[in-house]
Amino acid sequence: MTDTGVYTVSEITRQIKHQLESEFSSVAIQGELSNFKVHSSGHLYFTLKDGNAQIAGVMWRSRAASLPFIPQDGMKVIVAGKVSVYEVRGVYQVDAWSLRPLGVGELQAAFERLKQRLAAEGLFDMARKRTLPAYPQRIGIVTSPTGAVLHDMLTIIARRFPCVEIVFCPVKVQGLGAAEEIAGAIRDLNKLGGVDVMIVGRGGGSLEDLWAFNEEVVARAIVGSIVPVVSAVGHEIDFTIADFAADLRAPTPSAAAELVVRDSRAVLDLVRNNSYNIQNCIADQLKRHRTSIAHLLKSYSFNRPVDLLQQCSQRVDELARSLSLSGSHKLAMTSARARSLQQRLAALDPQLALKRGFAIVYKQGRAVMSKVEVQPEDPVEIRFHDGTVQSVIS
Amino acid sequence: MAQKKKDPGEATFDESLRRLEEIVAQMEQGEIPLEESLKLYEEGIALSKVCAQKLQQAELTIKRLGKDLEGNLKLFEEDSE
Image (tube, helix red, strand yellow):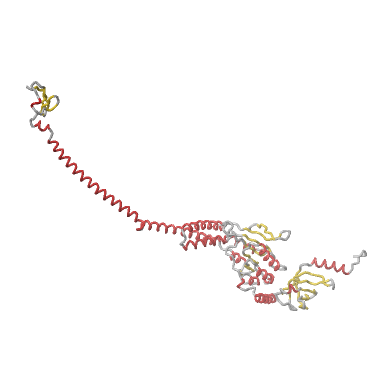
């Protein structure tokens, strides 16, 4: 600015640009389309108007490519974008990020067109769908931080299978920028890593409310996700593009919570059954081994040594018996012989002769066998069977 | 996902349960030497304890994914409801 308080055109334009662009950096404008043109460059130019005013609009080629429908003059639409000032010509316009039909009929038509286009691209092919992990450890949830949906899902998961970690991504689920936030959260959960499955959804609402889940950016984020995605949008009757792109569509957010985790009580039963089976198996095996050991113990070949032993001991008994037999025989013979000797010996006993009336004469302790051994006057001893007397030879 | 094996503390619930089922199938088939099946038995009982323990955990862990000042992804603790 010069010191006289006069702007140059460039200066005032730059200030207007700065003020307008910072004031209206993110807006949604509702109006009727007119002068809609697709330039050869691919950019879209249009005018948005209502009964009293109009505003120029542009959508650059990169964004125009993701338009879910072909805009036509007279169509009521909502444009999301920012106000920008084109300095060269001194005009302002809406730089549109998204353009969507206002009104159910037009939305429905847009929905069908996008669905057909993405289906033709193969984004909804069953072959692309991944199966959900049976026992996720970390579950991502992309939904609104407000409202009952998150709370309901957490309650159900906590009841069914509490031994998991929930990673919650709060996002706007309707209105301007909601689709971008949802898509960004899906990509963030992939970037974070360690997430086994994610639920992307919101509670019920009108077709317009659910529209973010019909935007291509969300469908592409779902298809591009490495982590399996369960969509859970609205009520059972609501089908969105996100549902077609997802690996599994849950009819409601609560149903999604039921689908991603099993009932831990049933799993606990399964674990206990397994543990029981293992114990049975080992008990059976031990029993089988015991039985076969018992069989073995009774088997012929195992008992052969015992048999041999028994035979040997029997033989020993036999031998012992015959040995003792022959021994006692010999004893008898010997004792008989001894007895006859005894008898013969007894017959020789002088005592017997003495008893019959004989007597023995002793001279000086010796038996006198002949009369010549004695002289008269010799003292002698005469022995009878019942005693001895002293005498003198006469 | 952590793909480490063998360390029962590190194994995921899914891995533990799958191993447990594998052991049951192996043992039910029979025809494994007694010493080996005793080893399997021990491993199986330990696994079933680990699994049952995990299942009886009562509290849900809830974290919120956000960004730190540098714009890096960060997990924030969230009170469970």
